[in-house]
Picture 1 (cartoon, helix red, strand yellow):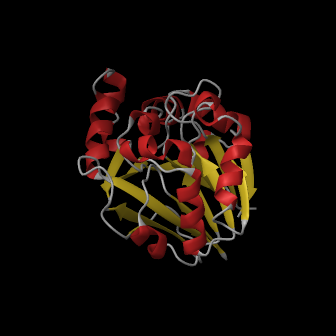
Picture 2: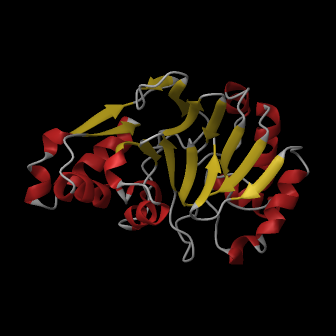
Length: 263
């Protein structure tokens, strides 16, 4: 069964959720989108029953530390301890340059394995060859209406008849809503409610309202909110659902760490 596992669903300041990381499991293989929480991502994979050896690809959305800090620990476990032959990391070149420095600047035994790590920079609307299976594809979409200093990507994953889009960090972008039309599921970051809209948008993030509008315009059947800030910021998680429901007619849930969704 193909499934999506939410390894980490928190924002950078969360003390109760791991930082952002998704795991797509397709048969006996798997790949990650973002890997944000040190050794925490590795622990979550173990808890979810996903062998580390099944993961040979990580797709990065952007360079923020809460989306990339788990990569060095993951590679240590997979290459140094697990003896994997090779590993591929995809994403904006800006983020990959930072990761390459992080991976090989600290330990000699990491640097000796430099040739085993393949960095694959991505540009707009680019096919990502992570899985060689029929009716399976991953496409990276460069987000153009974000912080001009930070290259951000979203990803659309096609698994059989299911098409899932993941936004990463994003502020409202009507052109993106249209570019992902026809998806079945939208995994959208949610920084706040509209009460704190100015703060959210100033930090290049979205509200529950923004997520609901994006889901409705894209034609999605299900909206999953993730990258959730502390409850001191949003109050009840139900508040996020209630706001998004005003703009989206499909199913809405707030992701929790280790949530599994069949796709």
